[in-house]
Image 1 (tube, rainbow over the protein chains, first blue to last red):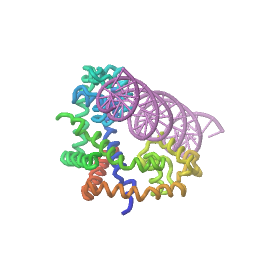
Image 2: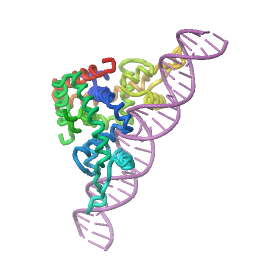
Image 3: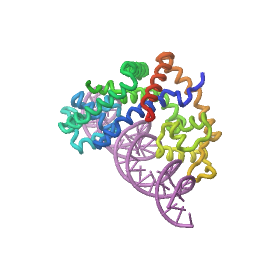
Image 4: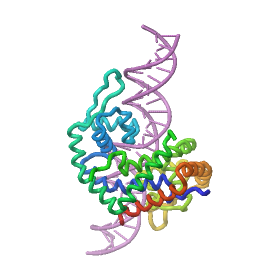
Length: 145
Length: 145
DNA sequence: TGTTTGTAATTAACATGTGAATTACATCTT
DNA sequence: AAGATGTAATTCACATGTTAATTACAAACA
Protein backbone atom coordinates (compact mmCIF):
# COMPACT_ATOMS: atom_id res chain seq x y z
CA UNK A 1 0.00 0.00 0.00
CA UNK A 2 1.22 3.43 -0.90
CA UNK A 3 0.77 6.39 1.42
CA UNK A 4 -1.98 8.69 0.25
CA UNK A 5 -0.90 11.71 -1.72
CA UNK A 6 -1.42 15.00 0.09
CA UNK A 7 -4.34 15.66 -2.22
CA UNK A 8 -6.06 12.53 -0.97
CA UNK A 9 -5.04 12.46 2.68
CA UNK A 10 -7.95 12.39 5.08
CA UNK A 11 -6.61 14.97 7.57
CA UNK A 12 -5.81 17.45 4.84
CA UNK A 13 -9.09 16.89 3.07
CA UNK A 14 -10.96 17.46 6.33
CA UNK A 15 -8.94 20.60 6.86
CA UNK A 16 -9.69 21.96 3.42
CA UNK A 17 -13.35 21.10 3.72
CA UNK A 18 -13.57 22.94 7.00
CA UNK A 19 -11.74 25.82 5.45
CA UNK A 20 -14.12 26.34 2.53
CA UNK A 21 -17.09 26.13 4.88
CA UNK A 22 -15.72 28.52 7.48
CA UNK A 23 -14.90 31.03 4.76
CA UNK A 24 -18.63 31.65 4.52
CA UNK A 25 -18.97 32.44 8.22
CA UNK A 26 -15.89 34.54 8.85
CA UNK A 27 -17.22 37.84 7.50
CA UNK A 28 -20.23 37.54 9.80
CA UNK A 29 -18.06 36.82 12.83
CA UNK A 30 -15.69 39.65 11.97
CA UNK A 31 -18.54 42.12 11.72
CA UNK A 32 -19.49 41.24 15.28
CA UNK A 33 -15.90 41.22 16.52
CA UNK A 34 -16.04 37.68 17.76
CA UNK A 35 -13.76 34.75 17.04
CA UNK A 36 -14.89 31.43 15.77
CA UNK A 37 -14.05 29.77 19.08
CA UNK A 38 -15.79 32.41 21.16
CA UNK A 39 -18.84 31.87 19.01
CA UNK A 40 -18.69 28.12 19.61
CA UNK A 41 -18.51 28.64 23.35
CA UNK A 42 -21.50 30.96 23.34
CA UNK A 43 -23.56 28.61 21.20
CA UNK A 44 -22.84 25.64 23.42
CA UNK A 45 -23.80 27.58 26.53
CA UNK A 46 -26.92 28.89 24.84
CA UNK A 47 -27.98 25.39 23.86
CA UNK A 48 -27.03 23.52 26.95
CA UNK A 49 -27.29 25.93 29.83
CA UNK A 50 -24.58 26.55 32.42
CA UNK A 51 -21.64 24.17 32.27
CA UNK A 52 -18.36 23.60 34.04
CA UNK A 53 -15.20 24.31 32.10
CA UNK A 54 -14.26 20.71 31.41
CA UNK A 55 -17.66 19.86 30.03
CA UNK A 56 -17.72 23.06 27.99
CA UNK A 57 -14.28 22.39 26.58
CA UNK A 58 -15.39 18.97 25.44
CA UNK A 59 -18.59 20.13 23.83
CA UNK A 60 -16.94 23.06 22.07
CA UNK A 61 -13.87 21.04 21.05
CA UNK A 62 -11.53 23.50 22.66
CA UNK A 63 -8.53 22.56 24.78
CA UNK A 64 -8.42 23.71 28.40
CA UNK A 65 -5.63 26.28 27.98
CA UNK A 66 -7.48 27.92 25.12
CA UNK A 67 -10.74 27.84 27.00
CA UNK A 68 -9.16 29.62 29.95
CA UNK A 69 -8.23 32.52 27.69
CA UNK A 70 -11.55 32.54 25.87
CA UNK A 71 -13.48 32.58 29.13
CA UNK A 72 -11.47 35.54 30.27
CA UNK A 73 -12.24 37.46 27.09
CA UNK A 74 -15.94 36.63 27.11
CA UNK A 75 -16.23 37.49 30.77
CA UNK A 76 -14.65 40.87 30.18
CA UNK A 77 -17.16 41.54 27.44
CA UNK A 78 -19.90 40.39 29.80
CA UNK A 79 -21.11 37.75 27.40
CA UNK A 80 -20.73 35.02 30.01
CA UNK A 81 -20.55 34.78 33.79
CA UNK A 82 -18.80 32.37 36.08
CA UNK A 83 -20.04 31.22 39.48
CA UNK A 84 -18.13 29.07 41.91
CA UNK A 85 -19.61 25.70 42.68
CA UNK A 86 -20.43 25.02 46.32
CA UNK A 87 -18.46 22.22 47.92
CA UNK A 88 -15.75 22.36 45.29
CA UNK A 89 -13.55 25.41 45.02
CA UNK A 90 -11.94 24.21 41.82
CA UNK A 91 -15.01 24.22 39.65
CA UNK A 92 -17.12 27.05 38.38
CA UNK A 93 -20.34 27.14 36.44
CA UNK A 94 -20.14 29.13 33.24
CA UNK A 95 -23.33 30.68 31.96
CA UNK A 96 -24.24 32.86 29.00
CA UNK A 97 -25.62 36.31 29.84
CA UNK A 98 -28.63 37.96 28.22
CA UNK A 99 -26.21 40.00 26.10
CA UNK A 100 -24.62 36.78 24.99
CA UNK A 101 -27.98 35.30 24.08
CA UNK A 102 -28.82 38.47 22.18
CA UNK A 103 -25.62 38.17 20.18
CA UNK A 104 -26.35 34.57 19.26
CA UNK A 105 -29.86 35.49 18.26
CA UNK A 106 -28.63 38.39 16.19
CA UNK A 107 -26.43 36.05 14.21
CA UNK A 108 -28.95 33.24 13.89
CA UNK A 109 -30.78 34.37 10.73
CA UNK A 110 -27.62 34.94 8.75
CA UNK A 111 -26.22 31.70 10.07
CA UNK A 112 -29.24 29.79 8.88
CA UNK A 113 -29.07 31.46 5.48
CA UNK A 114 -25.45 30.43 5.08
CA UNK A 115 -26.24 26.82 5.93
CA UNK A 116 -29.14 26.78 3.52
CA UNK A 117 -26.96 28.12 0.76
CA UNK A 118 -24.38 25.41 1.37
CA UNK A 119 -27.03 22.70 1.43
CA UNK A 120 -28.49 24.14 -1.74
CA UNK A 121 -25.19 23.92 -3.59
CA UNK A 122 -24.13 20.55 -2.22
CA UNK A 123 -27.51 18.89 -1.99
CA UNK A 124 -29.49 18.46 1.20
CA UNK A 125 -29.42 14.68 1.12
CA UNK A 126 -25.71 14.54 0.45
CA UNK A 127 -25.24 17.03 3.22
CA UNK A 128 -27.01 14.87 5.77
CA UNK A 129 -25.23 11.78 4.54
CA UNK A 130 -21.88 13.50 4.90
CA UNK A 131 -22.68 14.46 8.47
CA UNK A 132 -23.71 10.88 9.22
CA UNK A 133 -20.53 9.51 7.76
CA UNK A 134 -18.39 11.95 9.71
CA UNK A 135 -20.16 11.08 12.94
CA UNK A 136 -19.64 7.45 12.18
CA UNK A 137 -15.94 8.08 11.63
CA UNK A 138 -15.69 9.96 14.90
CA UNK A 139 -17.44 7.08 16.60
CA UNK A 140 -15.17 4.43 15.12
CA UNK A 141 -12.03 6.36 16.01
CA UNK A 142 -12.92 7.67 19.43
CA UNK A 143 -10.46 6.71 22.13
CA UNK A 144 -13.01 4.53 23.86
CA UNK A 145 -12.86 2.50 20.68
CA UNK B 1 -35.40 26.06 9.51
CA UNK B 2 -33.62 25.78 12.81
CA UNK B 3 -29.90 26.35 13.10
CA UNK B 4 -28.01 23.10 13.55
CA UNK B 5 -27.12 22.16 17.09
CA UNK B 6 -23.42 22.26 17.84
CA UNK B 7 -23.44 18.48 17.79
CA UNK B 8 -24.64 18.53 14.20
CA UNK B 9 -22.88 21.56 12.80
CA UNK B 10 -20.71 20.83 9.80
CA UNK B 11 -17.69 22.92 10.82
CA UNK B 12 -17.59 21.38 14.29
CA UNK B 13 -18.11 17.88 12.97
CA UNK B 14 -15.29 18.35 10.50
CA UNK B 15 -13.14 19.64 13.33
CA UNK B 16 -13.87 16.68 15.57
CA UNK B 17 -13.32 14.23 12.75
CA UNK B 18 -9.96 15.76 12.00
CA UNK B 19 -9.17 15.67 15.68
CA UNK B 20 -9.78 11.94 16.18
CA UNK B 21 -7.76 11.16 13.07
CA UNK B 22 -4.82 13.37 13.96
CA UNK B 23 -4.70 11.86 17.41
CA UNK B 24 -3.32 8.72 15.77
CA UNK B 25 -0.49 10.60 14.07
CA UNK B 26 0.63 12.96 16.81
CA UNK B 27 2.76 10.50 18.81
CA UNK B 28 4.70 9.66 15.65
CA UNK B 29 5.30 13.31 14.85
CA UNK B 30 6.30 14.10 18.41
CA UNK B 31 8.85 11.31 18.43
CA UNK B 32 10.50 12.93 15.43
CA UNK B 33 10.19 16.43 16.83
CA UNK B 34 8.23 17.74 13.89
CA UNK B 35 4.93 19.59 13.79
CA UNK B 36 1.97 18.54 11.77
CA UNK B 37 2.38 21.53 9.47
CA UNK B 38 6.09 20.99 8.98
CA UNK B 39 5.30 17.43 8.06
CA UNK B 40 2.74 18.61 5.50
CA UNK B 41 5.26 20.96 3.92
CA UNK B 42 7.86 18.24 3.64
CA UNK B 43 5.41 15.77 2.12
CA UNK B 44 4.22 18.25 -0.47
CA UNK B 45 7.78 19.06 -1.48
CA UNK B 46 8.68 15.39 -1.58
CA UNK B 47 5.72 14.61 -3.81
CA UNK B 48 5.81 17.60 -6.10
CA UNK B 49 9.41 18.72 -6.29
CA UNK B 50 10.65 22.28 -5.73
CA UNK B 51 7.92 24.88 -5.41
CA UNK B 52 7.58 28.58 -4.82
CA UNK B 53 6.12 29.68 -1.52
CA UNK B 54 2.70 30.64 -2.82
CA UNK B 55 2.20 27.34 -4.59
CA UNK B 56 3.48 25.44 -1.57
CA UNK B 57 1.17 27.32 0.77
CA UNK B 58 -1.80 26.42 -1.37
CA UNK B 59 -0.94 22.76 -1.64
CA UNK B 60 -0.19 22.40 2.07
CA UNK B 61 -3.19 24.49 3.13
CA UNK B 62 -1.02 26.82 5.15
CA UNK B 63 -1.35 30.60 5.15
CA UNK B 64 1.60 32.70 3.97
CA UNK B 65 2.52 34.11 7.39
CA UNK B 66 2.64 30.62 8.88
CA UNK B 67 4.59 29.30 5.95
CA UNK B 68 7.22 32.00 6.40
CA UNK B 69 7.85 30.77 9.94
CA UNK B 70 7.74 27.11 8.99
CA UNK B 71 10.22 27.63 6.16
CA UNK B 72 12.58 29.33 8.53
CA UNK B 73 12.41 26.44 10.98
CA UNK B 74 12.82 23.77 8.33
CA UNK B 75 15.69 25.64 6.72
CA UNK B 76 17.50 25.86 10.05
CA UNK B 77 17.12 22.13 10.48
CA UNK B 78 18.39 21.70 6.92
CA UNK B 79 15.33 19.76 5.86
CA UNK B 80 14.63 22.17 3.01
CA UNK B 81 16.62 24.68 0.96
CA UNK B 82 15.60 27.87 -0.75
CA UNK B 83 17.05 29.23 -3.98
CA UNK B 84 16.27 32.59 -5.50
CA UNK B 85 14.55 32.56 -8.85
CA UNK B 86 16.40 34.31 -11.64
CA UNK B 87 14.67 37.34 -13.10
CA UNK B 88 12.45 37.76 -10.05
CA UNK B 89 14.01 38.70 -6.75
CA UNK B 90 10.79 38.19 -4.84
CA UNK B 91 10.37 34.49 -5.46
CA UNK B 92 12.40 31.56 -4.27
CA UNK B 93 12.24 27.88 -5.06
CA UNK B 94 11.85 25.71 -2.00
CA UNK B 95 13.17 22.18 -2.20
CA UNK B 96 13.38 19.28 0.21
CA UNK B 97 16.89 18.09 1.09
CA UNK B 98 18.07 14.48 1.23
CA UNK B 99 17.71 14.65 5.01
CA UNK B 100 14.14 15.78 4.54
CA UNK B 101 13.44 12.92 2.18
CA UNK B 102 14.99 10.53 4.66
CA UNK B 103 12.71 11.80 7.40
CA UNK B 104 9.63 11.35 5.24
CA UNK B 105 10.75 7.87 4.30
CA UNK B 106 11.40 7.01 7.92
CA UNK B 107 7.85 7.91 8.79
CA UNK B 108 6.22 6.31 5.77
CA UNK B 109 5.77 2.76 7.10
CA UNK B 110 4.16 3.85 10.33
CA UNK B 111 2.06 6.35 8.45
CA UNK B 112 0.76 3.65 6.15
CA UNK B 113 0.01 1.37 9.09
CA UNK B 114 -2.02 4.08 10.77
CA UNK B 115 -4.06 4.68 7.64
CA UNK B 116 -4.65 0.98 7.22
CA UNK B 117 -5.86 0.69 10.79
CA UNK B 118 -8.31 3.54 10.29
CA UNK B 119 -9.61 2.06 7.06
CA UNK B 120 -9.92 -1.27 8.79
CA UNK B 121 -12.09 0.14 11.55
CA UNK B 122 -14.14 2.42 9.36
CA UNK B 123 -14.35 0.28 6.25
CA UNK B 124 -12.26 0.81 3.15
CA UNK B 125 -15.23 1.53 0.92
CA UNK B 126 -16.78 3.98 3.34
CA UNK B 127 -13.39 5.60 3.64
CA UNK B 128 -13.08 6.19 -0.07
CA UNK B 129 -16.65 7.38 -0.30
CA UNK B 130 -16.07 9.85 2.51
CA UNK B 131 -13.04 11.26 0.73
CA UNK B 132 -15.05 11.59 -2.46
CA UNK B 133 -17.85 13.39 -0.68
CA UNK B 134 -15.46 15.77 1.02
CA UNK B 135 -13.74 16.55 -2.26
CA UNK B 136 -17.11 17.16 -3.80
CA UNK B 137 -17.99 19.53 -0.98
CA UNK B 138 -14.73 21.39 -1.43
CA UNK B 139 -15.46 21.63 -5.12
CA UNK B 140 -18.97 22.95 -4.64
CA UNK B 141 -17.87 25.54 -2.11
CA UNK B 142 -14.63 26.71 -3.66
CA UNK B 143 -14.53 30.41 -4.31
CA UNK B 144 -14.48 29.89 -8.07
CA UNK B 145 -17.62 27.79 -7.66
C1' DT C 1 13.87 58.02 -16.40
C1' DG C 2 10.50 58.41 -12.88
C1' DT C 3 5.99 57.21 -11.29
C1' DT C 4 2.28 54.30 -10.69
C1' DT C 5 0.26 49.93 -10.17
C1' DG C 6 0.48 45.14 -9.11
C1' DT C 7 2.34 41.03 -6.83
C1' DA C 8 5.24 37.91 -3.55
C1' DA C 9 6.74 37.67 0.78
C1' DT C 10 7.36 39.22 5.23
C1' DT C 11 6.24 41.49 9.53
C1' DA C 12 3.11 42.89 13.25
C1' DA C 13 -0.39 42.00 16.54
C1' DC C 14 -3.34 39.20 18.65
C1' DA C 15 -6.01 34.64 19.27
C1' DT C 16 -5.78 29.78 19.43
C1' DG C 17 -3.45 24.97 19.39
C1' DT C 18 -0.50 21.94 21.92
C1' DG C 19 2.11 19.49 25.48
C1' DA C 20 4.34 20.04 29.89
C1' DA C 21 4.50 21.94 34.33
C1' DT C 22 2.22 24.12 38.09
C1' DT C 23 -1.39 25.56 41.29
C1' DA C 24 -5.52 24.89 43.96
C1' DC C 25 -8.44 22.08 45.82
C1' DA C 26 -10.64 17.21 47.01
C1' DT C 27 -10.40 12.82 48.48
C1' DC C 28 -8.33 8.85 50.28
C1' DT C 29 -5.37 6.64 53.73
C1' DT C 30 -3.45 5.84 57.83
C1' DA D 1 -4.94 15.60 61.73
C1' DA D 2 -1.06 14.75 58.23
C1' DG D 3 0.56 12.97 54.11
C1' DA D 4 -0.28 10.76 49.63
C1' DT D 5 -2.91 10.64 45.58
C1' DG D 6 -6.15 12.39 42.26
C1' DT D 7 -8.53 16.03 39.68
C1' DA D 8 -9.86 20.85 37.70
C1' DA D 9 -8.00 24.71 36.12
C1' DT D 10 -4.41 27.59 35.06
C1' DT D 11 0.12 28.99 33.50
C1' DC D 12 4.17 28.54 30.48
C1' DA D 13 6.53 28.14 26.20
C1' DC D 14 6.37 27.72 21.68
C1' DA D 15 3.97 26.88 17.02
C1' DT D 16 0.32 28.09 14.07
C1' DG D 17 -4.05 30.72 12.50
C1' DT D 18 -5.74 35.09 11.04
C1' DT D 19 -6.13 39.78 9.37
C1' DA D 20 -3.93 44.04 8.35
C1' DA D 21 0.04 46.56 7.25
C1' DT D 22 4.46 46.78 5.30
C1' DT D 23 8.48 45.71 2.44
C1' DA D 24 10.74 44.21 -1.80
C1' DC D 25 10.55 43.70 -6.18
C1' DA D 26 8.30 43.70 -11.15
C1' DA D 27 5.80 45.43 -14.76
C1' DA D 28 3.21 49.02 -17.00
C1' DC D 29 3.27 53.58 -18.47
C1' DA D 30 3.43 58.56 -18.75
